[in-house]
Each structure stands twice: as C-alpha cells, then as structure tokens.
Length: 413
Image (tube, rainbow, N blue to C red; front, side):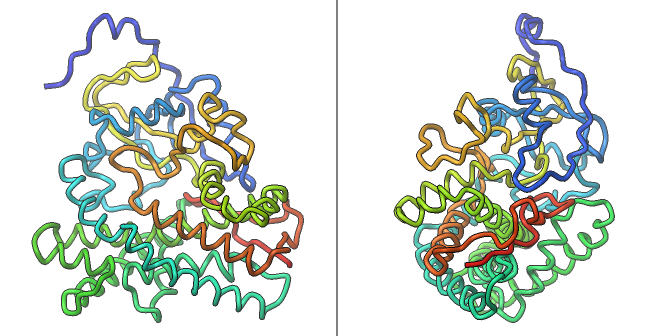
C-alpha cells in the first residue's frame, strides 16, 4: 500500500519548482556544466525535462541530498523497468532485465557478492604488475614514435582495454573489437543508435562465447567467476552476460576518458604536476582529488523511482515520480568542498561521489583507482618533462558522448 505522508509534512513542503528543459550540450574541455552550477546554487532540488522519453523528473544536486537519495531504499531502480521516462538517449545502454543497474535489494546484493569475488585487493595485486608492464610497453612505443605524440592513442586508449582484457579473460587478439564496441555503446547522439545496437549484439555474442569457454576451461578471472556462478545456479546466464558487458564498457571506455581527463588536468596545472614529481608518495591522494575534480560525464546517469512520498531538500517527491542524482554537481558542492574549482591535493574532509554512493556504488572503483595511479606514475617516471604540445584550448574533446574526455592529447617531452 502506498505510503500516506503526514499531512503536516506535506503542507510544509515547498511548492514544486517549474520544469526546466536541459539539452545537455557538449562543453569545452573540463568546464563544469553551467546549468548544474546554477541549479546547485539557486534551486538544488528542481525538476527537468531531458531530450528523450516522456514527462519530467526531479534533479537532486547537493552532496547530502544525493547521498540520501542513492542510499534510501524508497528510491528504486527496478521500478524503472518497462517505463518510459525523460532521459538523455533514446535507448538504455545497459540491459533492464538482467544486470546490476536495474535491480534492488535483496537480489542486487546477491549479484554484487558474485562480482565482488573478482574485485578484491588480492586480485588487484595480481593485476597491477601486469598493468605496469602494459603501460611501460605502450610508453616504449610512444617514445619510439617520437614527440609530439598523442597520449590518447598511445596510452589512454589501449591501456584500459588491455587491463580489462586481462581482468575479464579476453584473448589478446580480440581486444581491439571490444574497444570499438565500448565506444559505440556510450555514444549519445540519436544518429549513433544503430551503431550502439550493433555493438550491443556483437559484444553479447563475444561474451556468450567467452563464458562458454570458461565453463570448459575454468580460470581465475572475471569470466571464470561468472561462468562458475551461472553453472551453480547462483546467477542466470542472462545475468552473467549482462554483468560482463557492463564491466567491459565501464572498464574500457570510461577509464579511457577519465584517465585522459586526469592527465589533461595535470598538464594544465603545472604546479600540481611539479609537486607530484617531487612527492610521488602523494599519488593516491592526488588521484582521489582528480576523481572529484574531473567532470566524468555529461548530464546524468540512471534515475530512480520514488516508491513512497519522500521529502528531499524541502520538496515533497511523490510516489511514482522520477529522480535523477547529479554526482558531478555533488562533487562541486561548496558546503562540502570549499573552493570546488581548485585542484587541491591537500583537500580533507568528506569523500567524493565520483563512483556513486549507496548500494549501486561502482564495484570497479578499486580497479579504476589502480589504473589511474599506474598511468600517472608511469608517465611521470618515463617522461618527467612531459607537457602539452599545443595550447590547452586546442586540445579536442569528445562530443555527443555520455563520458567526457579528450579525443586527442598531443604531448611533448
């Protein structure tokens, strides 16, 4: 039975704000979204209409409100399944029927436990030396090519695909196909929907083949973990496929763009770059601040549905209404992160929400941090004098994508 809110609480709620249309346009470099900055400042809980889908949705931007909505069980992901809501793209990237993104407790916790068997400190210790060797080999190639060189082409593009290839258990000869489909799956333009659909089907076919081979030849990689869990009936075959696809996309395309943005941030903040050269022990803390500082995506991700009437930030969100959380905005909340525009390696206090919060916090965060540390330390060790080979304003960034990042990153040393 739907929750009947306290009439006094409902009466005390502020009137709902006007619905704002948000086109989510491409932005230069690492510039924050001016729409989100305005909302965070003037109307931190508001209502929006996105380019696709039906109706409107609530948008939550403050740090504490974002953490509240993403951890409160009254906001559901599973209630989205089969429902048309206002959204950034015509079709969802992830499967709505068999994966972590669109389910709630208790099944969500059961699936996370399966995947978490692969994302352990021990597995990262096994993976890190492989990642360091891969980075060294890629930078060898860049050094041979000579300056100026495109760091995206030589390092940020192939490196995360090689890491996720080793983690998932993909054959080395097949890695370039996985890389291309990750790019197509996360293209946001309407004209890219055909490519995204084809990429989804080809990726699914490769995952099915990989899991079948792991049943015959068990190994200590993610595909082996998923194949074993599916064989024992702990998860379904469809769930194993969806989980592998989600991790492949986030572990390839997302890390490529995020790590590229981090390096661009360092190259355009020479004082912080010099400090990292002098104080390499600062790297883990610097990487954490870079995750907060870099606007890792355009717009917003997967929303939730209120299953009861809930008051958030003075507004009453009614049962059945759609709610989006703006993590990139929460990471710029000045009440939590003073001077949010500053890249500050000495920042203390609350942790960022770049990997989300609550039950849907990104499982791959431990691997993304490791990869960022390996990339930055490898580059600074090999090329201590690295610098942009063009003015910062001439670095070209992705367009019409869900994940922001440089298309090219020309450097010299």
